[in-house]
Length: 285
Image 1 (tube, one colour):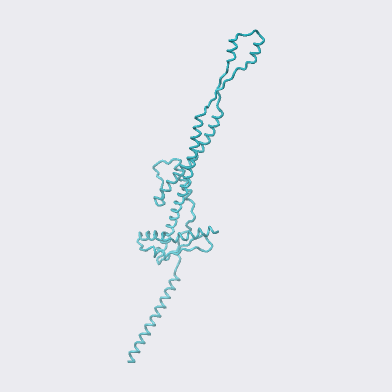
Image 2: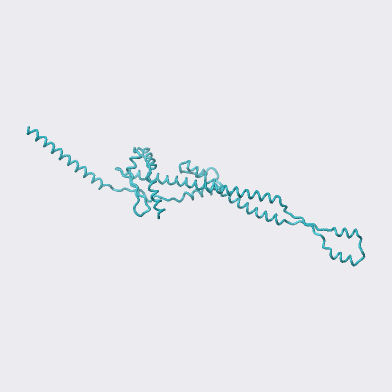
């Protein structure tokens, strides 16, 4: 509840800021309605109806068209200022995420480089040399006449050589594959935040308005960045509720007219009294 009340009070202060009055006065002057920001602030009343989340704006003018124009321009400028603030806030958040993604990218890249070096130093195949299982041969030889010594020497030197994949190499390759996948994910996230930051910076330069260049082909990364930016800016704390309408000020005008009439009547009576008093003084002489 306290956060909600603070948010409403903050919006009330922003809606009645001199910045909005200056911009609206400039727009009115461009349309031929000469008015200063100070005079405009005196004509605008911004209140909050009790126990609501609404902000009520009233433009007091003798002309209905001018009053509606002032109210519309004021709401328009305020909503645009909120949008600009959202763009700056989104850019700050995106830059923070970009910084974190860049740090993660450097860390993952260092891990991948280290694992690549380990894989390069590890042989993928292991050479195996096995002696012949010659127990039966020796058994047969012992039961016969003693064989030629040279034949026995050659027989003892018989080995079978082969190759098989290194378990260490396979484990390193599997670990490197997982790390490279994580690196690719961090790289994609970094690129997304870079594209989003560029779009937000462009919107700030263009004073909040942004149109993608339709002539240049958009890739998946830029398209995803635009969707991400639109998602960030889509949510707004305040929206326009309805259209400006007219409130009759006839009673107030009649009251003012009555006061002017009474004041004029009193002044006329005082003038007549002074005139008669002056005539009496002259006749007494």
